[in-house]
Image (tube, rainbow, N blue to C red; front, side, top):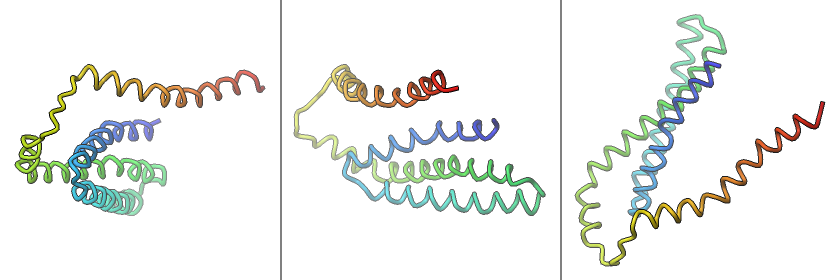
Length: 144
């Protein structure tokens, strides 16, 4: 169960990372997204290799403990990716502000309309996602 707790830390950081990458992609700036993905993976691999080595060879821990450290590497990679995007955000903020100020589309969509549209798009995905646990429940109840 402690590995599930470790995985739950990843759930905190990954949505923030994905959202921030989406912001850069929305501004047609793919460079920060690419760099953050590379730094995320490099940090994750370094943490997996270094952490597993320390657990197994220095601390004399078990393979299960090394697996936990390797699992936590996803959170470390996400944090490094977030800091990478934060660096690019600070660096490109003046340019992004100019792009927003020079927007000539004249579109000003209210938040209520945006939320309604997002929810309407998400409903089919939610229904499909609910099918998997429902199938498992039906299988558990019908098969001995």
